[in-house]
Image (cartoon, rainbow, N blue to C red; front, side, top):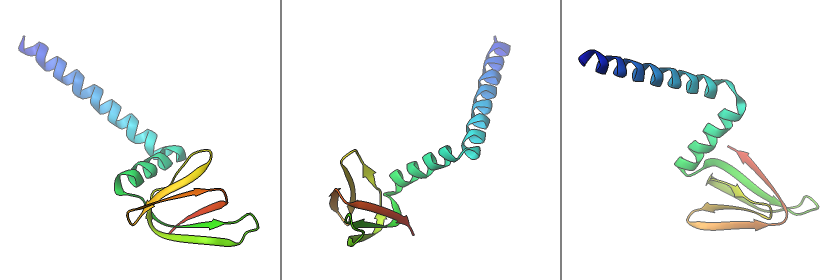
Length: 99
Protein backbone atom coordinates (compact mmCIF):
# COMPACT_ATOMS: atom_id res chain seq x y z
CA UNK A 1 0.00 0.00 0.00
CA UNK A 2 2.86 2.38 0.76
CA UNK A 3 4.30 1.77 -2.73
CA UNK A 4 0.94 2.68 -4.30
CA UNK A 5 0.86 6.01 -2.46
CA UNK A 6 4.39 6.76 -3.62
CA UNK A 7 3.48 5.97 -7.22
CA UNK A 8 0.43 8.22 -7.07
CA UNK A 9 2.50 11.04 -5.56
CA UNK A 10 5.21 10.57 -8.21
CA UNK A 11 2.69 10.61 -11.07
CA UNK A 12 0.96 13.69 -9.64
CA UNK A 13 4.29 15.52 -9.28
CA UNK A 14 5.25 14.53 -12.83
CA UNK A 15 1.95 15.78 -14.27
CA UNK A 16 2.22 19.09 -12.41
CA UNK A 17 5.83 19.54 -13.56
CA UNK A 18 4.94 18.88 -17.20
CA UNK A 19 2.00 21.29 -17.04
CA UNK A 20 4.19 23.98 -15.49
CA UNK A 21 6.82 23.57 -18.23
CA UNK A 22 4.18 23.72 -20.97
CA UNK A 23 2.61 26.87 -19.49
CA UNK A 24 5.96 28.64 -19.06
CA UNK A 25 7.10 27.75 -22.59
CA UNK A 26 3.76 28.77 -24.04
CA UNK A 27 3.71 32.14 -22.32
CA UNK A 28 7.31 32.94 -23.15
CA UNK A 29 7.06 32.40 -26.88
CA UNK A 30 3.97 34.09 -28.25
CA UNK A 31 3.22 37.77 -28.45
CA UNK A 32 -0.49 37.38 -27.73
CA UNK A 33 0.42 35.58 -24.51
CA UNK A 34 2.80 38.41 -23.61
CA UNK A 35 -0.02 40.91 -24.18
CA UNK A 36 -2.32 38.81 -22.00
CA UNK A 37 0.24 38.72 -19.19
CA UNK A 38 0.73 42.49 -19.44
CA UNK A 39 -3.04 43.00 -19.41
CA UNK A 40 -3.43 40.84 -16.31
CA UNK A 41 -0.61 42.65 -14.51
CA UNK A 42 -2.28 45.95 -15.44
CA UNK A 43 -5.57 44.72 -14.00
CA UNK A 44 -3.97 43.65 -10.72
CA UNK A 45 -1.74 46.71 -10.28
CA UNK A 46 -4.40 49.31 -11.07
CA UNK A 47 -3.16 50.21 -14.54
CA UNK A 48 -0.07 51.25 -16.46
CA UNK A 49 1.51 54.69 -16.44
CA UNK A 50 0.23 56.25 -19.63
CA UNK A 51 -1.04 59.37 -21.30
CA UNK A 52 -4.53 59.27 -22.80
CA UNK A 53 -5.36 62.03 -25.28
CA UNK A 54 -8.78 62.79 -26.77
CA UNK A 55 -8.92 64.40 -30.22
CA UNK A 56 -11.87 65.70 -32.21
CA UNK A 57 -12.54 64.52 -35.76
CA UNK A 58 -10.30 67.24 -37.23
CA UNK A 59 -7.30 66.21 -35.11
CA UNK A 60 -7.49 69.02 -32.57
CA UNK A 61 -6.63 67.95 -29.02
CA UNK A 62 -9.60 68.26 -26.68
CA UNK A 63 -8.15 66.95 -23.41
CA UNK A 64 -5.30 64.84 -22.08
CA UNK A 65 -4.97 62.69 -18.94
CA UNK A 66 -1.80 61.28 -17.40
CA UNK A 67 -1.37 58.71 -14.65
CA UNK A 68 -1.73 55.05 -13.76
CA UNK A 69 -4.64 54.16 -16.03
CA UNK A 70 -6.36 50.88 -16.88
CA UNK A 71 -8.34 51.48 -20.08
CA UNK A 72 -11.52 49.62 -20.84
CA UNK A 73 -13.75 49.95 -23.88
CA UNK A 74 -16.83 48.67 -25.60
CA UNK A 75 -18.37 49.44 -29.00
CA UNK A 76 -19.51 52.94 -28.04
CA UNK A 77 -17.15 54.29 -25.38
CA UNK A 78 -13.75 54.25 -23.69
CA UNK A 79 -13.62 54.52 -19.91
CA UNK A 80 -11.09 54.53 -17.09
CA UNK A 81 -10.67 55.60 -13.47
CA UNK A 82 -8.14 58.31 -12.57
CA UNK A 83 -7.66 59.83 -9.12
CA UNK A 84 -10.90 58.31 -7.87
CA UNK A 85 -12.99 59.70 -10.74
CA UNK A 86 -14.52 57.74 -13.60
CA UNK A 87 -13.81 59.15 -17.07
CA UNK A 88 -16.16 58.04 -19.86
CA UNK A 89 -15.43 59.11 -23.43
CA UNK A 90 -18.09 58.77 -26.12
CA UNK A 91 -17.04 59.76 -29.61
CA UNK A 92 -13.83 61.41 -30.72
CA UNK A 93 -10.50 59.72 -31.29
CA UNK A 94 -8.68 58.35 -28.24
CA UNK A 95 -4.93 57.73 -28.31
CA UNK A 96 -3.21 55.96 -25.42
CA UNK A 97 0.58 56.05 -25.08
CA UNK A 98 2.53 54.15 -22.44
CA UNK A 99 5.11 56.21 -20.57
